[in-house]
Structures are given as C-alpha cells and as structure tokens.
Length: 324
View 1 (cartoon, helix red, strand yellow):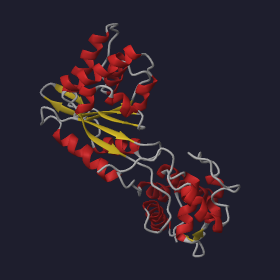
View 2 (tube, helix red, strand yellow):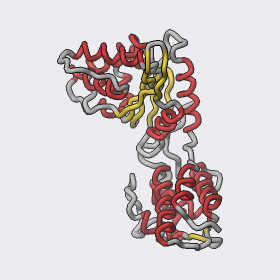
View 3 (cartoon, helix red, strand yellow):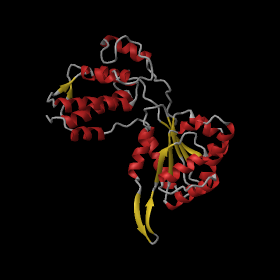
View 4 (cartoon, helix red, strand yellow):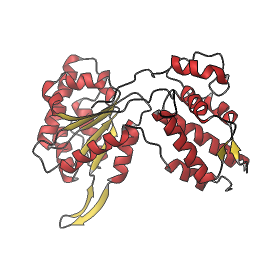
C-alpha cells in the first residue's frame, strides 16, 4: 500500500467525478465553439443550475483546453484568447462589461469617460485576440441591477455585443438569471443552446447516479492510495450518508475526500482502510442547502434511520429536471 503523499493527493484530485449532465453540456459548448467564426449566427448558450453542480467547473475545464497564448505573426507578437472567461461584474452595466472584457484580453481600456468609446475598444480587443467565445460566469449578478432603465440598457448592450462581434456569449449561473435574459425576446431567441446542470437526487438504490458517482470516487481513491472502504461499511448506506452530508453537491463530496487524504498526509498513516467515522469531523463543516431532519449528523446517525432521511430529502432544493 502506498503512503499518502501530496503527489498522490493531487493525482486523486485530478481523477474527477463528472455530473451526469456534464458531458451533454460539454458537447453543446464544444459544438458552439467549433461553429464560431464559421456561421453568420452561431448563437449563444445558457448553462444553469443550483450552486455546486459544476457550472464554473465546466467553464474552467473548457478554458484549460483552450488557454490564452502568444503567437508571432507579420504584425508582431500577439496575445490570443480563444475563450474569454471572467466573472460577471457587479451591476454589469455596459461600461462594467466592456471594462472587464478589456482587462481579460490585456487591452488597455484607457481613461475615456465615454461608455460608447469603451464598448468599441472591447469589441476591437475581442476581434484582435481571435476570441471565439465569451464566457461570463455568475450570470445571476445581472439580477442585482434594480433599475429597469439600466437593466434594459444592459440587455440591449448584450444583444448588440453579440450582433456586432458575431462571437457567442456563454452565460453560466443559477437558474434565476434566465428570466432576465428571456425578458428580451431578441436576445432570448439567440440563446440556441440551454444546458441545465441539475443536482442529483438521493441514492435510494444502487442504480442511482449519486451512488454510482460516490462509488467511482471510492474506486479512484483506492486506485491512487491503495486504501479501501472498510468491508463492514454498506456501500449504499455510505452513499446515503454522503448525500445527507453534502446536500447532493459534487464539490462537497470532493471536499470530504480531500479532507480525508489531507488528514492521512498529516498523520503519515499507513492504514489500509477507512470508515464512516473518518468523515464525521470534515462533514460537520459543510454547509447544507437544507436542514437535516435528524438530531445526529449524517456520519453519526443510526443506520436504520437512513432510508427515512433519504426519503425526506429525496430532491435537493432548487432541483432542475434534465431537458430533452
């Protein structure tokens, strides 16, 4: 058995567990990327779902596949940004959006006080950088603008930005922002791809997606470290505890296993197995999206009560259904 090291810890973290809807969203995003620059109207995309279902992760993965780089051509050294990814600026006025685009592309926005001038700079920078997709994350920030007049200006700007640049906008955020986008029919019509990333339901059987996801994580951990889940632990019951401790969030499952591996690094332990109790302390620090209807934490509650708790928390708050 291998002792846990930081190298093994990082190797385990790299063995990612993907949301069931992740691959579908990835295919949509890749199709849009490939069509950018080839179609007169490639369209835009909306990625949406509750926190923790992998929206930002999807964007980061795609950005990692298409990173910025420098190229040398007849015009000299040029900074190329095929995917311009950034967090939606607070308020997201046309000026805010233009400024963050310039910053992302390393284009000097200058000191102009004219919003229209800054917008032109952002569009010019996008074209010069060879950008094929613009990806504003945390799109629910759009909703923080309470002024109807300013909201309308922002919507007009987003539509005009797409029409003038012909570069797809890929929005990602919680579901609420879709109402903002859809309030502008011309902009809504341009959102040709919609990719929901719903949370997974409770693992009531061994065939559920959440149980299979946890088991894959268990297998990955064993492959990297040689440590196995203790033979006395029921796999389905373990997944159910994971669900109740994480609220069905994939990022929280990763956090729990990361905590276990970090503890093993600190202890320099050579234990061959791990059990439910190893997760108790780490799970107590997670923030649940619902109030657990139990007097005991998920990794300490009686095994006989697990099925009832799973039934009560069968569908996480904010759950979305997969669209066909």
